[in-house]
Amino acid sequence: MKFSDLSSISPIDGRYSKLVTELQDIFSEYGLIKYRIFVEIEWFIHLSCQLNIKELPKLTKTSANSLRAIHNEFNLKEAKKVKNIEKKTNHDVKAVEYYLKNKLSESKQLSGLSEFIHFCCTSEDINNISYALMVRDASKLLISSHTKNLNALLKRKAHLYASIPMLSRTHGQAATPTTVGKELANFSSRIDRITRDIVDTRLSGKMNGAVGNYNAHLVAYPKVNWEKISKTFVQNLNLDWSPYTTQVEPKDNMAKLFHAHGRLNNVLLDLSRDLWGYISLDYFSQTFSNKEVGSSTMPHKINPIDFENAEGNLGMANSMFHHLASKITVSRWQRDLSDSTSMRNIGICFSYTLIAMTSLVKGLNKLEINRKVIKHNLDNSWEILTEAIQTIMRKYGVKGGYEMIKEAARGKKITKKEIHSIIQALDVPAHEKNKLLSLTPSTYLGLAKKLAKGI
Image 1 (cartoon, rainbow, N blue to C red):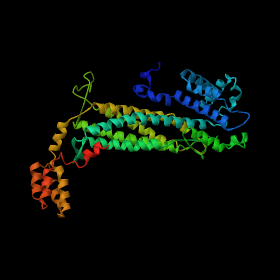
Image 2 (tube, rainbow, N blue to C red; image 1 turned 30 degrees about the horizontal axis):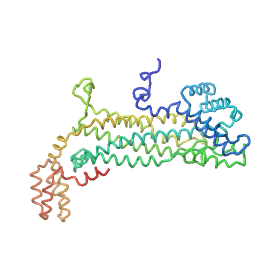
Image 3 (cartoon, rainbow, N blue to C red; image 1 turned 30 degrees about the vertical axis):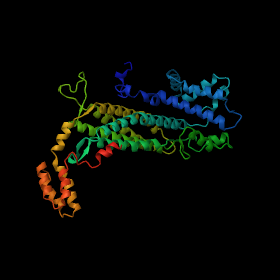
Image 4 (cartoon, helix red, strand yellow; image 1 turned 90 degrees about the vertical axis):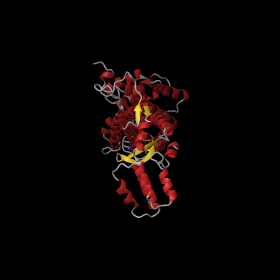
C-alpha cells in the first residue's frame, strides 16, 4: 500500500497530521538528522577556534559560513542521501559523519580537514545535545505560542464571566457559590505557575567522549584544557554543562521538564473534564454546524467531543512523558541502548499535547453560557446559605450553632422562607440578622468576582 494519511498506523501521522506540522521539522527523522548536522558542524567550528593546533587552523569567516550553510540549506533531498549512507553503515550518527565528510571534500579549503568532523566524539555526544535542542525548541513552541494562546482565551472568558454567579459542587453536591469566571481563573492561574516552571527549566548537555573521561582527547592533545572546551561549547548552545557523565548525559533536567509538562497537561485535563461536566449540566451550550452529525442514531445530539478529544490526547501525552522521564535517567553501567529507541518517541508526547490544546481552544470558542439554567440552580439552593448562618453563630459564641443548623438543613432542600425563619430565630445582633437576610444564593460570592477579574 502506498503511504498516505489513511495508511498511517499512528493518528499523529494520519488523522491528526495537519495539527502537528509545526513539530514535524523538529521530531521527524529528517529533523533529528538536521539537528545532528548542526551539532557536528558547530563542534568542528568550535574546535577550530579553541584548539590552536596546526592540524586544524582557525576557519575563516567564509569557511565557517559555508559549513553552516550545509545545515541551513539542508532539505529532504539531502536527508535521503544520509539515509542511503546509513543503509551501508547501519549506524545513523556515523552516516551523518560520512555525509559531512563528503560535503567537505567538495571544498578546496576544507577537504583536508574532514577527519576533524566528529573528532573525539561518541555518538551520544552528538545525540544528547541534538535531543536537548529538539526538546527545548518544541517546549518553547508549545509554551510561547499554543499554551500562551489557550491561557489568553481562558483569561478573556474569566473576565467576561467574572460576575456570573454559579452553584459550586463539592463531591458533586451543591456547595458555596462561586462565579463562572472565578472557576476559569483557577485554571489560568495554575497554567501561569507551571508555565514559569517550564520556562525556567534549563536542559543540559555533555561533550566528553566514550565514557565521559576525555580519554581519546588527552591522547591526541594532552596539553589542551578539554573540560573548558567542552563546557564553553555546551554553554554557547545555551545549555547547562554536565561535567560528570558516563557515555550518557544523565538527562535529569530533561526528566524535570517532562514532569513539568505532565503537570501542565494534568491541569488541562482537569479543565477538560470540568467543562464536559458543565455542558452536561447545561450550564454551557455549544455552537454547532448544521452539516455536522452528533450521533449516528440520535439526531438531537451535540456531544462535547472537543473536551473528550483533549482529555484522551492529554492522557496519551502524559503516559509517554511519565515513562520517558523515568526511562531516560537510567542506563546500565556506562551505556545501554534501551534509551535510544525510547528517545525517538519524544515527539509523541509533544504532538498529543499540541493536538489536545488545539481541541481545547476549539471547544472553548464554541461555548455559550446558559444563564437561565445557572440562575435556576442557584435560586433553588437556599440551603447553601447555612454556611454563612453557622459562621455568624460561631462569631457570637452561640454554642452548638453548627449542630443546630445541621439538624435543620442536612440532606434537605430549604426554601427562602425557611432560611429566613432560621435567621429570625438566631440569638445574634439585629444588624447581623439583617445582613444574613439580605443574602441570596446569587450574592453570597465572597471575593469571587474580584479574583476572576484579577487573573
